[in-house]
Length: 302
Image 1: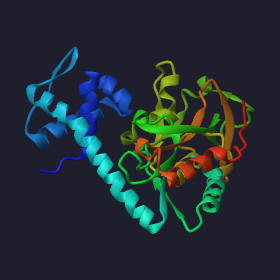
Image 2: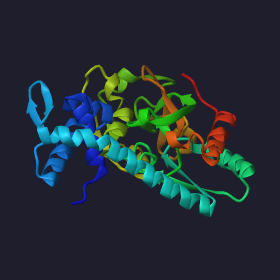
Image 3: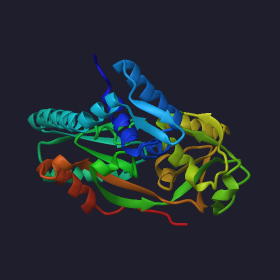
Image 4: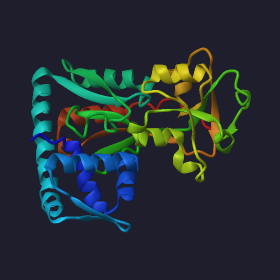
């Protein structure tokens, strides 16, 4: 029987938190999606893992047995994957760097140039992850280091360092009634339709809809897109607006879209992340130092 390790990771968080709501919050996924995944695991194993009640999720006897073994199993598997893939990278003199769109943006070429100076003969393989992969492959050992938006689910099991902080702005169709304002209060955007990431991206969708900063006000979804080009097209065509890092005004500038500063919404952080096991890896640490030692990009404040 093959079981997706992601299901086991979801299971152990639910077991630790005792409720689906707290577990979903910690994992940055929706509660219905988490419920579906736990049910899927139970079906695959053919056993009931939790007793559900109004007070939460209580482990059954089979659930306790699994909960006792899963952490060590996942830790061993993660280490095996990381060591195997890291060995392949060293043999090829290749550093695998994961990233999510809009992370370091224009700072990335300078980081890579400095790494190449420090490590002659080494090549950096940049691997873009989907919005539903919050660690950009780092948690699964698919990459050696990652450039990410902070915070992200699973961050507490990895090393992270903040590179810079930038405000969140809003991307609007250039003919939008609010596009002429110098600064737009976030409250004035609450009733606007938003272009959102797919529901399965969980934490990413909620972060860029700023669901926790709406005072309980519901979100209107005007369009759903799963990649930057479609996201830009939906905004330009008037299907909705979207929060974006301030650097998007430079990196994702295009006709038909206007970017404006927003007040009343928290900023976004960009960071570099790596596995705890790579604290002593000289190649990974060279890359981290290249990130932290470089000049900060220009940022625009509100």
